[in-house]
Structures are given as C-alpha cells and as structure tokens.
Length: 255
Image (cartoon, rainbow, N blue to C red; front, side):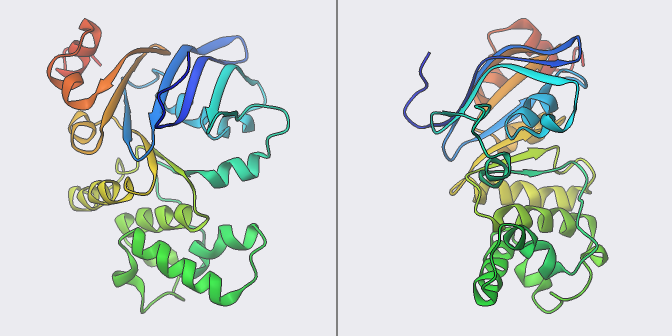
C-alpha cells in the first residue's frame, strides 16, 4: 500500500516485541508533511512505544525487536545500512519531562551541532539564536545565554529542549507528552509553538489530554492494547468517529 504524495513518513504492518511480549500489532499509519498527528489512547496502549519506533529509540532496549517497515521519504529506517545517529538528527525528539543538560543555555542548544562535528563559531551562534527564536524562547533568554539552563522554569526548559532538537535541522519532531509536567500557562505556550512549528516540520505528539489533541492536531490516531483502532482528521475523530471504542475513549466512558 503506497502512501499519498505528501506523506513524509509511514509505518506498514509494524509489529513490536519486548522479548516474547507483543506490544504493537500490525500498525499502518501515514504522517503528512507539515501536519500534526496526535497519538491518543489509555496508558500502556503502545502509543509511546510506537513513537519511539519512529527514530529507533527502542534500539536501546536489548530484548526489543521490530517486524514490518517504517519509511522516511521512501527509505526503510530499519534497513541494515541506516546510520541511526543521522536518523535521529532527521527525526528529533522531545521527552515528557524537560531534560536540559547541566550546561549553559547556549551550550544546550549548540550540543547537537558540536556532536555532529560543527566547529564554525559564527555558524553555531547563528543556529543557536535561530533555534531559540523558533522555540519562542529567544526574547526570554538572550541576555542570559551563558547562565545554567537548570535555572530556567519548567516551561522554559521544555522550550529549550525543543530548541535543542531544532538546532540540528530535523525534518520530523516527535513529542512524547511534552506538556504533561507543565502548568496551564506553560502548556499553552507549547501548544502555540506547535502551531507555528508545523509550517516547517512534520510533528507527531503523544498526549493523554483529549483537549490538547483536539487543539493542536490535524490528524488523530487512537491506540488500544497495542493496536491502531482508528485514525482520521481530528475534527471528525472527535465528533463522529467510526469505531465505538474510539467514541467511548474520547467521551470518557473508559480509559
């Protein structure tokens, strides 16, 4: 089954195992360019596991294995020749809890560039500023770039982590419940940022919040017990889903 023309990444017949336990069952899902896709479902349903398959983060778990395919611009990311470091540069990730390094604000954003061998100081400075601008953080930190990132608020730390991901110029941004540890005001800033970022990136977000999924996403995919139950345009999924399980979850009858 070939994807539509504007699809940036897609999964086909994806199964995922932790040892003998099958955590994902035959997942088929497309991610369009410059679209936000929300992955929803109850705890333990496989949505974060699936998200981590998209940049091979699960490779770090020794007993895990993948069957099926995930393609980025038509190339299988699990092919033997794939450089995983390069893949993770193209498919950036922001985690549930802000995880800045115990370094300065500047060095947090510059980190990925330095790891990738960039030495040009002017280029690094320009990329740091541009990334902080894109993460809607520049105006708040431009006078304290050489202060510790650990002195920032939780919401600022999360936007810093987004800037760090953007600095290496990814094409896709994965977000694993990026606002779950934040207060409502910081959450609103992250959601506003997602709307801005989708002009330049394909974004895939795991969220427990139905309201957040409704606010930020174009497409919603509902997972239950390791299976993709239904996917579709967010407005349709939230008003007239085809599947009763989807309707029950969205309306709060279970999960």
